[in-house]
Image (cartoon, rainbow, N blue to C red; front, top):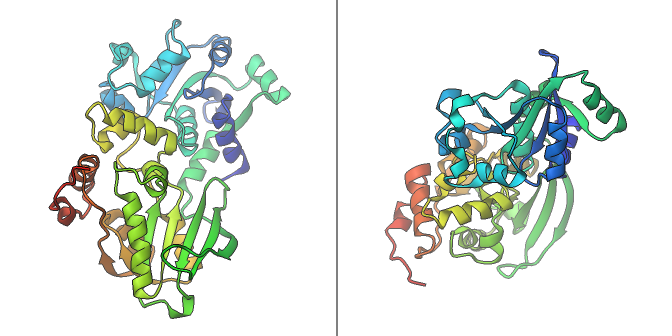
Amino acid sequence: MTHKTERGIFELRQGRSLCVTDDARDVCALVAAVEGMSPRQLDELRSLGAPLRLVLTLHRGRALGIGERSGTSDLSIPVGSAETPASLLALATDRTPAAAKGRGTDQRPATRAESAGLALVRLGHLLPSLVSVEVAVDDPLVAAWLAEGAILDVGADEVEQALSEGGIEITEVAEAPVPLAVTDHARFVFFREGGGLQEHVAVLIGERDSWPDPVPVRLHSACLTGDLFESRRCDCGEQLRGSLEHFKNQGGGVLVYLAQEGRGIGLGNKIRAYSLQETGLDTVDADGVLGFGADERQYDAAVAILRRLGIDRVELLTNNPAKVGAVEGAGIEVVERTPIYGGLNRHNLRYVKAKVDRSGHWLMDMISQPVSAD
């Protein structure tokens, strides 16, 4: 990922506009994330005099019933003159916003520059929606903003290259012993991705030279609500603690703790999805309403960490076929898959059923458990 691409993500996360250039068309799409947009920022985009567009993912378009004509592309719809940041946020998040009525009449597929900007918003774990205004690359006002350093420019080709790059470069930053309640023999190894955007931890249980063969391994995506606060809405915390117990009993193992909150959509969007689930949606549909796919996670970083640790044969603790596929696809042998379950309760029942019915997780034994009334 180039320096400019990383800077572009940072700019959007800070609530600033970004100029995404498409040299093939000699245009600049000045884009701004809907999340955190101020009235002043919206007015600045309008000051360019060109029509404003709201760019959404195909998932969000389909949730609004307006994505059919964009094919498999992100889509772009007009922003009216009376639109406010609040109304745009509603268009990006509400389950059935009244303002969506009739929006499909002037939709079109997003341009290359718009899609590149939307990709940066998603990489920044913001809502996948942005406002865009397309102008010539030599527009005087945009040129002045660039010269003053008020906005940054990044090429659509740079973003596309960053998205297409295979694998992830991992840097080992620090390592230290961290005695845990389950065992005194634990070490934390801290890793940072090459782009500096994400940071992960490998928790090593037992002495490396005495690990079993295959090495017991758990790829665990961060879940603040479940892991730390023992939320009843999911089984993540129970899987985390059960994995550590399994490692202790087996004489060692590795838990790779990945910064992929909410199946890769980020903590803020996960909380938004929780709110939508209160209206009756399951976890997959709630994510779709916000503009995300059923599971946004990637496991390149996990594979890179396992390789850095010299692990090439694993007993994988998982119920998720995608994790098995990712590890095997990277050339690491999954000698055995061990299921890892939490308890079933009235708060997480719909969540667990969605994992089975919508994502194909191997949880039928868990589903057959009695449901706790707690």
